[in-house]
Image (cartoon, rainbow, N blue to C red; front, side):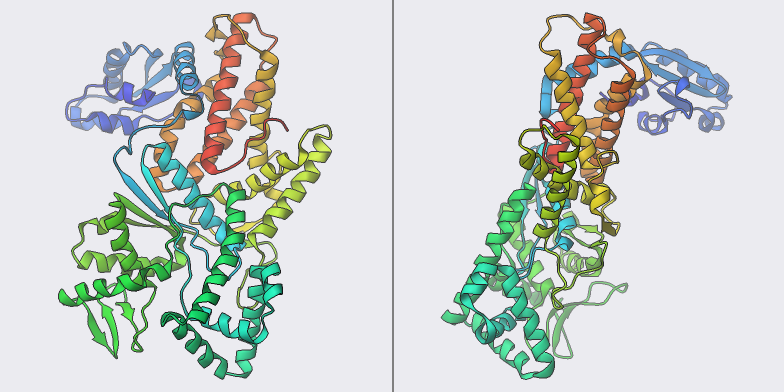
Length: 561
């Protein structure tokens, strides 16, 4: 429940809207002064009355709000204290009625959001550099679905371009079919790296690569068969990794899918007089503050922007989206400004619904990664290492735990995912196994351990027919935890509005920390029966919120740890 809104709607000041009041209500610096305070100094000049008198008047008007136990005017401020027992009863009733579905809403009913994310490259490893993109996109997918939107997850595969000509040449010259089949993408990477080394000494190889790619474009059966084989090998490995990450897509339409869909867009641009020739290339001018958008090179080749335009029109026709998100690193900022600018110049009203969800770059502690040089750490290798480290920690902390391997998988993979989602998406990050697998820090294992602790308490508590006495929750630790549970639905809305999964991640850490503080400060099972029931209900509600948020982030929930 939005108690700020309840208070704001009660305040009556001439010329001041409820929304203005709502935005001015903030937690006081000293929590002893209440849960919210309203400074009244801003109104003095407008109302020609002292802030002290205004605060006194407002306090009298809002004292009747049932959820408030105390309203006090102090030195030009109005301090509001919520009725802790009433708040506890209302919040816990609401959470327990909805269970793990708590936070879900129908705000997106009838609306569609397309999310373009992950977008792996065929015949190249699914490496750690893709992890941030994939984790953000998948979290947004689940978040919008929870808020009632129809969500379309799109993996815009990098399955077109001269690199496939290079790979075909390399495969014909040095590829061992049996070895490539057994070693998968790593085998394809090895011969791709060799091509670049050999081409430095023999530039004619680049001509052969261009000819091989032209053969794919022309539908040559052998070239197309090899291209499809490379795609099959890649997707087998990629799907295995996606399964571990609990990531799904509704479309794998990649670059090649749009080959026959670009010309109508170019024709439309030409008909509108927007397509210009510049040194043989075809461009669209999109504004004085950026270079023109290059759509066709002088040699007739199309570019990413051409295919993205075709994809945008296809997605609008096919899904009739209300918003189309592109989860792509910030290095592509200019590309998206140009691409969206072309749509605006074409007069498409839905151009304003296109959003570049920019994110930073991720690297490992030992440096960056390069496909051409072969210095690539695959995501599967990272996940395996995280699981191995988690297995060691679990064996040390919980030697008697059943299904150690299953729990280690959930903890290790969850640590990697949460490590991607804890900070603001725009930040570059250096991934550290030790930091992400810390059971005591702001990490997935810490949250998973808290979830398991809730399960343990509930298992010991069993069932009770006793009516809860919520006075057992009238303490600062319980009050803080209840406030966080209450705010969870608003947190989801804010995260979706800002395209920021880290808002959910950080709230999740806050909930886990608040719960553990309550757990250590107050006896749960040894309290009197009625107070015990109130505290058990708080544990159960906390478990639901932890479960909901972990599911949204794509992180496993070990029942025991």
